[in-house]
Image 1 (cartoon, one colour):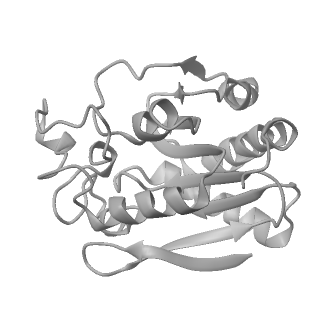
Image 2 (tube, rainbow, N blue to C red):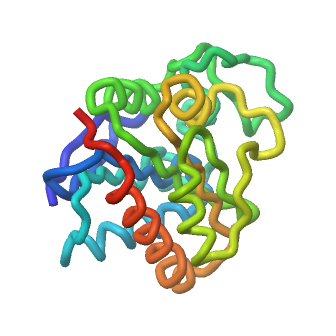
Image 3 (cartoon, rainbow, N blue to C red):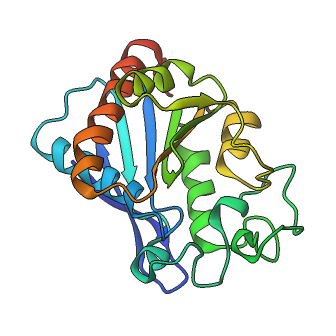
Length: 222
């Protein structure tokens, strides 16, 4: 395992990334985009814990377990500037018009240090797949061609696969990568309120099943 810092939060805390593997397609796994969704953070940290012992894939996987680290520490959805990082990506549909303050997209697209760090990393590393770990009602939201990985997770969890979350999400990661840049993006909504034991025992293995599919089907990232 290699650990690096891809940027800093509003408060100056490091955005820590953990890299596993030396060959194969590049995969990005994000947790903690919304700081009040601990289930995704637990799943990301669970994967890191397993892979510290043994990493079984011919893949290059980067895990950022607490992307919105200030929000995670404060148990808040938004970052310290009060911005929803999953509405701040510089998409073609970015808009300041929001239904609720909890979706605040920021003063302009890509205004936040966390988002800027992610955009820079994406431009440099060019992953073949992104898995973004959230929590809400159980659903696997696919943007771009990540149906095979979603099906592998569904086989373990019985979660429904949808190509739309069911409401507008301007400025979101799935649109920025999955729809506008041909980087398939799977938003994995773990059941909200699930205890850590079940997250680790159900959803960590489910992600690993998805990566078995990626190992067989994704071309090597350059």
